[in-house]
Image 1: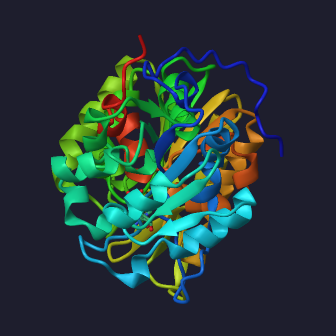
Image 2: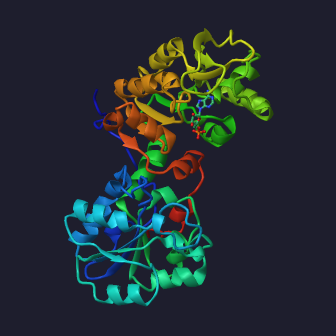
Image 3: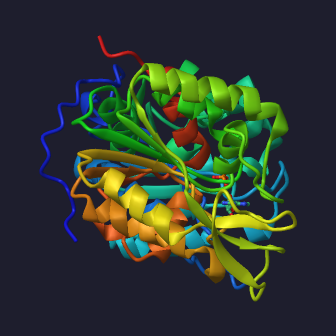
Length: 409
Ligand code: AMP
């Protein structure tokens, strides 16, 4: 399997905002908002540190430039209270290992202790502040709280793409008080999820899946006049099949979306975008491991049975549609991939995407998890670190965390 890094992608300066490279950070205090919202097991051990790793280029750059590096993040949903199980303490240890240098941990992100430690920092020092969401003011985008965060630094750098769709004190409020720039991860996310889609190497194929049409409708509408082909799998496909008049048994359907599904198919047809739906599926009567399963065509789903994965004929059809792709954007699994019996379609499409020898972009969340489980994550060109934020970008919407950054002159 080849990783397609050699397609010439003409990415214009789509960001239009300052980046960390535009700032004179030597000897200055730089507040870097990162997304260290990593999964932890019951023993507070980090089970996947890719979010920490993805922001290392920004942190290392700041260290190498001689900045005083102040790192801040949220973790989980402590709902404005101090909750030890949401402490960033495990992140400190991992960061020290990855950076190969000492990282000082401050047990509160604002207040005298933080101010005192920061005032003693030397060039190249790194400090990590405790979970921002231990303060209710963070999610309320409270101005006084944002000002206290800003008081710690000379510059603000946002590298937390996963939180860029939120208007919080550490993503938006703080930008009112400091010159504010994007980090390298933030820039890369925008370049891939916006730049490549706006100016793709064609054919551009979108693969959409997941539970519901309603969750992806904005993406479909935005991509409809940009892509050459759309492949739809997962639970959402059955609302489209229903709209085409097929009986879909007990499969997931959003009745209120049927008319919209019809108009989208009509819009795609008028724009000459090829549209692919599953032709067969794996069905069961219950969504559980060990349930009896059958493979049937999508025209022959019995009444009490529900479609929980695409079948082998659909895999073949979708794989053929992907074969000449030069750019692929994928968001949403093809079935209930969390259960082995319904995971084959998603994994087969993961392989088809990497076999296509196309520049491949995977939206975050479930699809990220699926390509890892399929063992092909190393062959994907770019995997977004943000679920909600990447969806919002693919819907063609602006992200508050990016809009708030200082414009590039
Ligand atoms: P989303 O968050 O909309 O991308 O949906 C992801 C979820 O969709 C996953 O947890 C899958 O288990 C679920 N899903 C995918 N295909 C189906 C299906 N055919 N029926 C029910 N749920 C599905």
